[in-house]
Length: 202
Image (cartoon, rainbow, N blue to C red):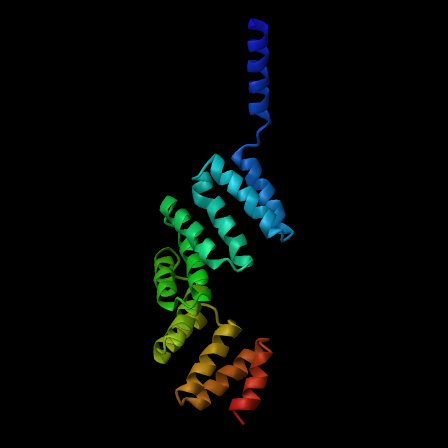
């Protein structure tokens, strides 16, 4: 009986060493993410979270949220990002949650997260750009233009910001300015700008 108990103990110890650690699951998840196996990656990140819910300051939650957003599970991604923010109030987590909210047409909620992200990352043109898109969708055209102005000031070659600002300007009656911005977007490589120029500027 004693030998049997020792055998079970030894087997238990060996099995414990065979269970992958959270960082192993995380690495497997990252490898699957690279090949766009998002569902497989979600399973691995889930295992990493079960092993250590606060792994790398919420990074496993953030990566699982990214995978969920790629398969358009924005609600699930928001839940994961909220968990990540509870672990570490990090600007990238707020930005990602804002993108998910935007995709669900929660423009005010998205604006809150983008504004939070700005506190730690005030020179990120993408945050201003997305704030501008939110304001555009909420009917605040002048506010949207102001946000696009900030994005372009930070990145003078930001073709999408010129494009969006141009459309908004035309919509509020600033046709010359808007058409110039669309032309600038085209110069910088945003090909859709030229079809809008034909439609709106001639």
